[in-house]
Length: 421
Ligand code: MN
Image 1 (tube, rainbow, N blue to C red):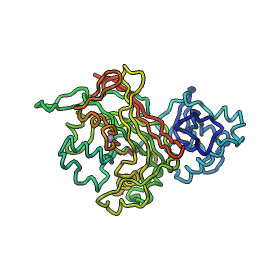
Image 2 (cartoon, rainbow, N blue to C red; image 1 turned 45 degrees about the vertical axis):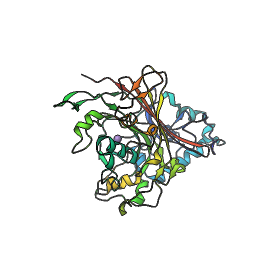
Image 3 (cartoon, helix red, strand yellow; image 1 turned 30 degrees about the vertical axis):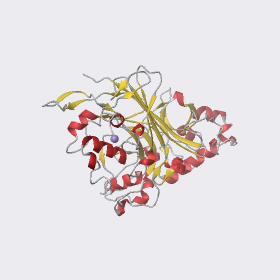
Image 4 (cartoon, rainbow, N blue to C red; image 1 turned 180 degrees about the vertical axis):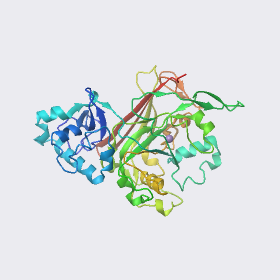
């Protein structure tokens, strides 16, 4: 049982008790778009609440934050406004408060079953950065592609390694992903060829959306970084391993990554996730002073991946892992990104890098789960998979659970479509 209850019904094991209050952008059947929160399976239209004078605080009663098609303005408004909005929503939705509960006309305008909404991408994402912050994942990649004895490169424990990705191809959960075409070179071939990727993979990642930005030239100090993070979502960073392998030296990921990235639609605030914030892994050797902080920055969130082929009636779990295993925290990633003075803006997306644990069933990519295809996954349908085939669907989920409180991030899913001509 959660401590607070709402007059809106919350099903058992729901990701969305009153303590969650995530934010997303939804489109109704009539085409209107607005910012929403949700409790259980009911979405609450914040734009309509402003129009009904239910959110009358001058800090957030204007039209720009919620009567809009993105969370950018709200994300940019800062943590005192985020908290005040959550406080007011909690007050209005708590069992026993009749102000909204008994106002039938307002409820009619503001409440919509989640099933009647088409969720949109949460923000207009200006910039997208993908990190590489799981020590198990980085070690597995090093073992497979370089030297098992020296799997981690010399910089890895000193720098939160990342690359600036492509934001235009980030799509919301449920959007099909087309198998990319690209240039590859088989190990036994003398020359490269062009065609559909044969090693189509996933990456289980957690992402965060930024809040207020910084001025160009003024880095964000480590102890302020969390104030620039609005909330989290689940990210599937689809990857074409054969394209990636041929292209990535010397400048890093490019077309093997940029054809599609999926995100879950409900952004869960750091405030809601606070019960799950924990001390991260010890960092040895010590990191440089600009990345040092005494504030715990890891999050104890359970993660899982399910795979559903066209022959299966439901998804089969192929991975279970935990986000607290990451070596670098979100604050360290953001501080490192801005340490050269580059500026971030509200609504940017940062992804963690593949989250892999230490056991074979906790790896966050097919590349690792099948160890480069040498150990195919055996599915309950009798099928095998090394990498994704057309029609396969991947579902990723994330949630925290502690002392009877469950705060979830719902899911991100996507089906692989055949390559174009
Ligand atoms: Mn990635």
